[in-house]
Figure: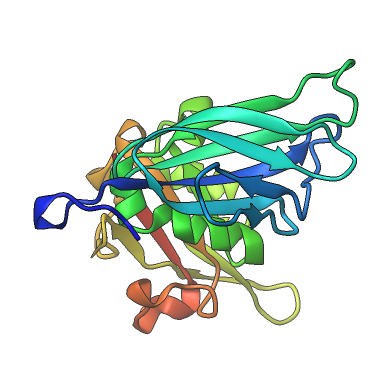
Length: 229
């Protein structure tokens, strides 16, 4: 049960992470992930991903075990209402290569808006592509729309979804665009937001992949969803 302050303020946080082979960087499925004091642990899925929810605020010791790998324990800090992301590299030979752990704290605003939840399932199912603030900082694009077209092959310049017609013809349809949950399709995205202001971008290729909150008449062309920091 989650502990709460007065007026329902959450006093718990969440860990979400991925377990990889430190040598090959391939996902490690069925790794046992646990935190002392909790009734039971969780197992990583076939993509190596796991979620530990409802952790009390404070310092915890994360334990990761898998047959054939050296056990790993790592201290993690949990803050109120914030998800901490952990990437764990297990090794079968601790003498040659030590276990690797990388920890990233996610922006609370994007967490509340469901960005990371949709990113998780999008990567798992292949139905959506998410671009993070780290991607933007790495590439330093000049325009948001051009950056989306560069990273997502199915998106043509001008945020148009490439649709193949008959023969050699190529058809495109303009994708609906949302900025912080508001439909801004009538204007030009680059007039509303600059790359350094963006915290995350979601790209959906067609009607079957668009989340219900971004559906509508134009959803057959997919959708581009942009969140500011």
